[in-house]
Length: 197
Image (cartoon, rainbow, N blue to C red; front, side, top):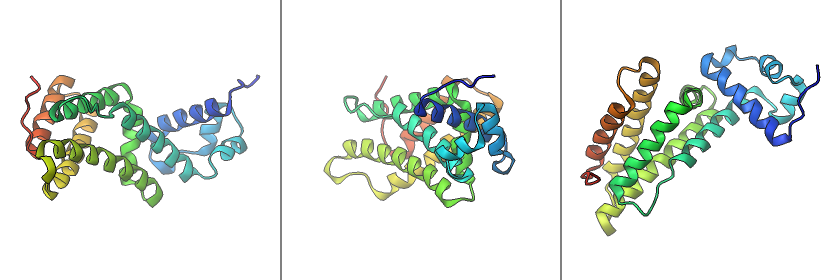
């Protein structure tokens, strides 16, 4: 059987997509590079050409998903702060709903033993946290938000991650109900009044 010819970028994306599926469903130690190569219909050597080690492959999968969610949730500076935060939350939940595999993989990295993999997760978390702090800063004016806002933003992000993972597992509430819960919690945590509607 002939292998499909893909460009280097297409092949890399294919391997990352397969990796996301496997790492989302299995513990790290149960994902075999041979299985990835077989599913992609490539040699193990070609996979190692793109990703020299399994750890680097897992980190690349996590980074790809982190970059995607950051791109999709980028704030619109034309909106008032509360609306920016709520629009970002809507985009975040849209990603969770349409990319559940990638979302699970990204947050499996939070518990990774490898510091490099965990660092990818932490970098993404820090960007989300800073976006919240920046939105709050525009409300507080030149004084900016206090240190408590940064703590509240990170705590809220961890709450949202836990809530979204539970929602993917049990679907006990609608997306709208989850959105409202997360929105109320965020605005209260950072001290912004919702005047968006």
